[in-house]
Image (tube, rainbow, N blue to C red; front, side, top):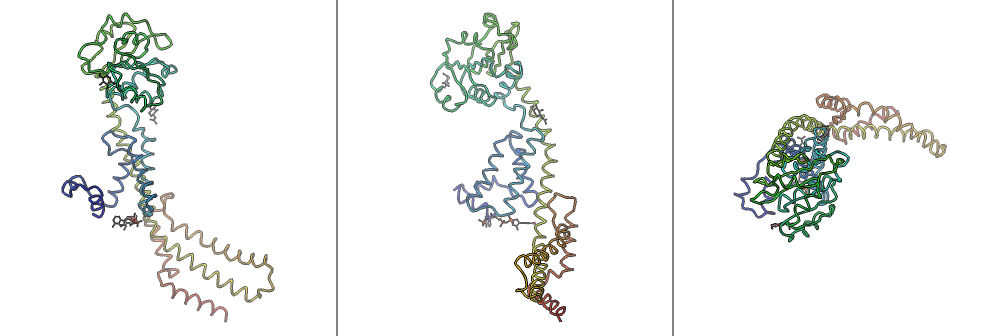
Length: 386
Ligand SMILES: NC(=O)c1ccc[n+]([C@@H]2O[C@H](COP(=O)([O-])OP(=O)(O)OC[C@H]3O[C@@H](n4cnc5c(N)ncnc54)[C@H](OP(=O)(O)O)[C@@H]3O)[C@@H](O)[C@H]2O)c1
Ligand SMILES: *[C@@H]1O[C@H](CO)[C@@H](O)[C@H](O)[C@H]1NC(C)=O
Ligand SMILES: *[C@@H]1O[C@H](CO)[C@@H](O)[C@H](O)[C@H]1NC(C)=O
């Protein structure tokens, strides 16, 4: 609930309103939810990438404001890993799921592969949808688009926003001339009358064979602005909103299937995270066992040095003896410590690891207070000295 009060304070939204939008998840459910969000499985558009960037931003903000706790930090980092894995292994974010991106994808798919990006692109209508078409053209790597629009008023603003593409404006009166010089014509106007009828299409010069010899009309206007009979012209193909919606629907279904596959990855990453987190329980035992061994080593070393007499030793000899002692301790501890680690990278189960931990605790009395252990060690050393 602490988080609730933090949001309440920072946002100034009334508690009653805020409460409606919150839900509480605990332990594994919370981790799973974060991993799913990161993978885009909780988004309206399945697999969208923006959310992963936001999860990364959370980690950055956390680091800038003093750091997340160790567990939370690891959980977010693992969430990012899960998000990346889902995207690369299921391909969930491929395939257009909006009409505007489907329009661009379809046009590029119908063009000869090697020539697609150098096709002459024309966009008629630069409203909201038209702007999205330009955006997707940029994303696909197109370098130039001719835009025909009734007014020029906002073209500069679009140019400012999308610097990676050359935008050439032409007035509506130039429309047919512009179409004659284009291989692909996207139409996206709110025009109530047909922009292209059969006779318009017939009058256009042919498209070069290297571009496939066919002029593509991709019409995303509703109502349609390229008359259906344009398709009857041999050198033209028309794709309309219904064709695009079909593609979008198929892609959405595909993403839904991939989201189900993604659950396997999420579960795997969740297990790995929880194994890591649970294995932290053995950290105190690891530390205690190390320091137990090291105390014995140090006192045996001391004893040895006294016996020989420090003056009798060269620096080199002294170092050799020290290294002998640490070498023996480290090699002896390596095996047991290995059995206390459980980070999901090997097949050891958590139960086994915890069993090992309890056994080591018993064998070396590591649960005992440090002072008592020290006393015991001292007594033992004295006994062997006598
Ligand atoms: N089941 C398990 O094995 C297991 C293992 C580990 C943790 N846990 C539980 O998981 C939770 C997080 O553990 P952790 O190890 O990640 O803890 P942590 O490393 O100490 O991190 C806790 C985070 O919560 C923040 N925080 C602390 N008190 C808060 C408050 N009153 N309101 C809002 N934020 C607060 C801390 O920020 P500040 O540092 O700025 O306060 C810190 O970023 C704990 O409740 C812990 O008991 C369970
Ligand atoms: C991912 O999608 C792209 C484009 O749809 C396709 O070319 C690629 O082969 C797919 N890869 C996998 C692993 O499914
Ligand atoms: C295109 O024309 C429409 C209608 O005249 C106008 O609302 C829109 O802002 C214009 N777009 C640009 C980019 O100028």
